Image 1 (cartoon, rainbow, N blue to C red):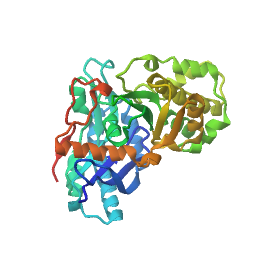
Image 2 (tube, one colour):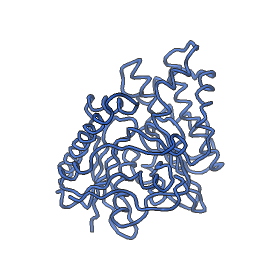
Image 3 (cartoon, one colour):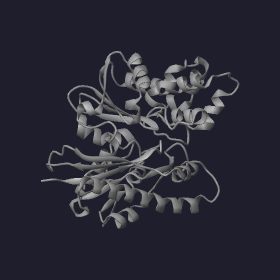
Image 4 (tube, rainbow, N blue to C red):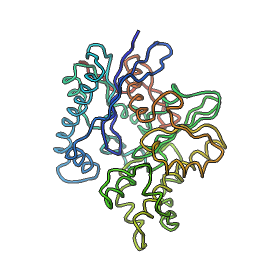
Length: 369
């Protein structure tokens, strides 16, 4: 029997809304199968509003309230477009799992009272699609003392765990690692910046939204002094559990590191790519001496970034998650469909060994159709 869910994801890069229709099939041993997927565009005006709210500014409450509704409408539009493309009716879908759009993430250690904010009103999504919507996945883990991130390791364990050491690395706006040890243990954390600063720098200098295949980074040479300054950030040496975002790794952070240096723009791009590769590789080295490294997210298509990882990880077999059954472009969206399913089944969705939460917990709030 089909067991249909929709997963919605908009990440730190704020480049599109990923929407997937997933069939989990057998209830006891769900094997997610993507039936239809699409990248729904985010209007430039909406993207600008999201990025503006990621940093402190005036009238935040009013702007956040309006953006919450606007994003809910955009997520609903993505869902209805997906359904039309798939030829599936809303009544055939069990639920939507919506991550929402993170606009502020202050984990334990960053502020006295940790919090995280994802916008994209699930009430609006449920009302405009006619489908039960599960959202707000991060705050229960944080209420239990956790980081609220990363949330994908529990799904990675369900989808990819085996009897050898595997690491799953998602390279989105930020990058994170899931460590799936041969003994069955699971750990993970955000390693640092992924594509966000690479996207920012090429947009600033060439007006392009991203560095296709990493070609511009490959044309430059990493600057040793800038690389050392960037990697000296305390976040990289901090012990997990840990999570991060644009609050730490942003344009101001980069500009401060560049101060006093004469740098060609392609060399800065190459250095940023090296920061991403170095921080990921260090996390992989700490985990194990060798094994299988599964890459997902937008970075899975960055040939230059993958080449840098291969140079730093010669004892690891590196391939994208599509080789293991789930397309790298859609893995996170599938993960939020999976989390919605866990919620409705009353099953935990977090990994305390990853987030630092006191215990496993059902995540998310249910908004009936």
